[in-house]
Amino acid sequence: MTLLGHLGELRRRLTRVVIAVILGFFACYSVAEPMYDWLLIPLKANLPPNGQLTFLSPQGLFFVYMKLALLASVFLTSPFAFYQLWAFIAPGLYREEKRAILPLSLLSALFFLSGAAFCYFMVFPVAFEFFMSFATDVIVPMISVDEYLSFVVKLLLAFGLVFEMPLFSYFLSRMGLLTPQAMRRHRKYAVLAIFIVAAILTPPDVFSQCLMAAPMLVLYEVSVYVSALARKGRSAAKPADAADAAGADGERAEDAGTKREGSEHA
Image (cartoon, rainbow, N blue to C red; front, side):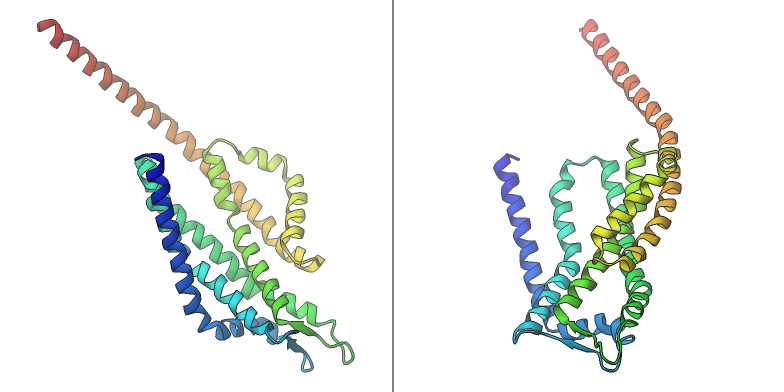
């Protein structure tokens, strides 16, 4: 296929993804209010009796529901988008790469959802209990619905991405770019980097930063173990690859000898 043919196919697949996101947006907007109420559950459990949720403009809540519907649509249509990407690049992949894509994709989705679930069920209750503890009879929390959505979505995405750390460690170790020895040797720098990343990904307060840094530290230790397993698998695969390569060379040499004999007889 020519370059223009590839570009045309890419355009068609991107168009399908955009149409799916638009259709998903309208479907999600019809249930945007229940979805937002579900996101409010951890806050409502810790909101003082005099606390309020507010929107500061006539159209404020409308745009919050639109933003939530768009985010939900992108999330729900992501498997379809991945399929379109897969269908586009699959012809250029080796058989081993094709076999590895599906399990790794499922693991990636599982890790991401595990991170988001950990954030929703474990982090949010603790975080909102801590934040709402500063309220008094005079100082009343009045939380913007827009800012609350941004806060929740950022943390859910951040924890989902952070939980991908063992998978990244596996990839880099299989490629020979990372070793468990190096991870152990540079652990103190990793701890510093973890707190810096947590400060970037979370809202600007120390408590949220620590809530994210704690599981990241645990995941780092898990990644060291995963890296060791990946390196063992890589070492075990080398003799097999060498044997396959030797067998392929032998077959090519045998074919070449057969062809020479045939030409001599001719």
